[in-house]
Length: 385
Image 1 (cartoon, rainbow, N blue to C red):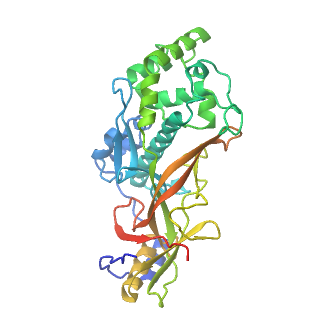
Image 2: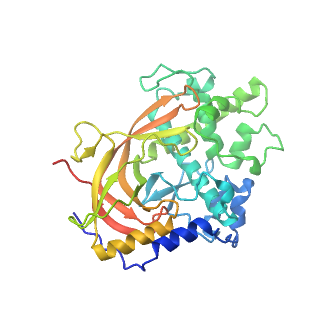
Image 3: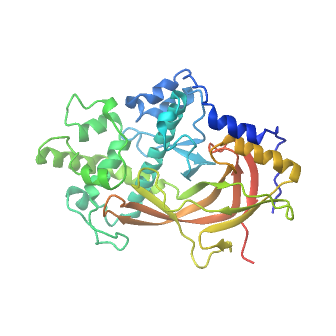
């Protein structure tokens, strides 16, 4: 097991920090530079073009180039070392948004945009996994195709609507207007949304072809898309990597003086959703786990963060002061995984795409912050005895 040596940190009075954090409202941070642009709804779809001009970092992002740039936009997704990031995006998505300053709201909007891009990435990759369902024939028609394929749990999936959602999120403006605006001048760039790859928008997507046109114009838009741009969309889907960086958090436990460090219980992202229950992913460990990792109570992995007592005391105070509403404080972890299976359930509001993943390494990278910019080093998940 590799030993972690965090940099020396200034001790903070824990009791004073917690008291002032609870009783004194922080000063509202003013918006800087072009940060205000993040709050404008019309910028949501094209927000990645603004990332470099913000006063804060959006974290690591990767630009994925389509096979045909004349037809499709680049897709900018949150990553770590080039792998799609799943799980916690940042600390700027609190339950009570009304207490946020405008500067915090701007960062939250960036996080929401990155989560939307993650949703689109998973939906685009799903296209390659469902070749037997998302055929040209099924896209031409509006009927559902549930129960025809083993990994579809329920009826209600509409390939025509599914492809419409991907097209509305990814097509260049000219192609988008051609297929979904029906030459309506009110269909402007500012009206473009990032549709959710989930039950609601897939169900409604079938009717968006031709935007309010009769069934003949709508069918013509579908046929034109299948002839001109569907092949490139499938090729892009097949090029996406299933490798992911699984991001979670863990509370700092009581210090273990015998082992001289912190015994951690790690729970990877499970049954979570980037966007309102529309897309879920969950842990999947095969019985013949090649990593041989120990799992406690069927949910948690064990790990140990070594640290000298003097260093640990200041570390606990610092992390608790960062998050006054979480007394023990938390740290963030990243595990390597790969998406291995896909199931679809379009039944009810909680239906959607469910991805299963498996770990590909026993290494666990630790960070002080949710943006994953302040490294604590790397430790290992513990193996079975």
